[in-house]
Image 1 (cartoon, rainbow, N blue to C red):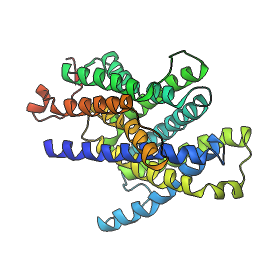
Image 2 (image 1 turned 135 degrees about the horizontal axis):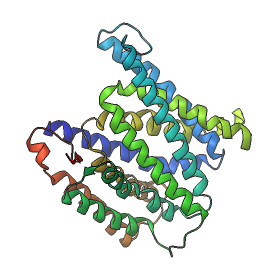
Image 3 (image 1 turned 180 degrees about the horizontal axis):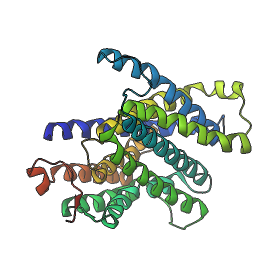
Length: 312
C-alpha cells in the first residue's frame, strides 16, 4: 500500500505540473474567446479524447464493448451520479474562477484559489473526521508559501476576491466528491462523463452571454488543445485514478504545486520574472508536501492509507 501511495503522489504531482503550465494556455486562449466558450471547447475535447482510451483499455482487458463497462445497475447509477456531480461542480468552479479573475489580480486569485488546502481539512472536521498534527503543520506551511508565491500587493477584498474564494470552496467539494466516488467506479469513464457534463453546463451561459464563432475558436486551437487534451483529458483523469490511494487533504497539498509550476512556466515560457520572494514561497510549498508524506498515522500502521479518520 505504501508503494501505491507514493506512486499516486507522483501522479498527482504530474497532474499539478500539467495544470500549472495550463495557466499559460488559458491566458493565451482568453485573448481569442470568452471564458465560457473556452471552458466548453476544452471540456468537449477532454471528453472526446477519452472515448478511444476507454475502448483501448476495455480491449486490452478483454472486456466486451460497453458504454458503462458493467452490467450491474447499481454500479452504473454510481458511475453516472459521480460523473454528473463532478462535471457540474467543475463547471461552476471554473466559471467562478474565470469571472473572478477579471476583477482581481492573478496573484491574489492564485492565493485565494489555493485556500482549498485549508478548506478541505475544515470540511473534514465538520464531517467528524480528524487530521493529524503533521498534516495540519503541512497545511499551515503551504498556506504561508502560497502567500509568498502569489501575493505581491496589498490585500483589499473586492467582488473578484469573493468569487475566487467561492471557487476555492467549490474546488474543495470537487476533490471530496472524487475522493468519495473514485474507489467505486471506472476512473476514465467517470472522467469522460464529467467533461461532457461540464461542457453542457458551460454551454448554457456561453450561448446567453457570448457569441461563439467557429473561426475564432479555431484561431485559439493551440491553447484549447492543450487545455482540453492535457489539462482536462489527462490531468483530471489522473486525479481520479490517483485519489483512490491518496487522502483528500494530502491530495490538496500536492495540488498546491500547480501555482509553483505556473510561476515556473511563466518564467520559462513567457519570460516573466521570478523573484526571491516567489522562490521562497515555492520552497515552502515543496517543504509542506514532503512533510505531509513523512506523516505515519496509526491507521497506516494497521494497513490503511487514509489520514482522515472517523472519530468513533
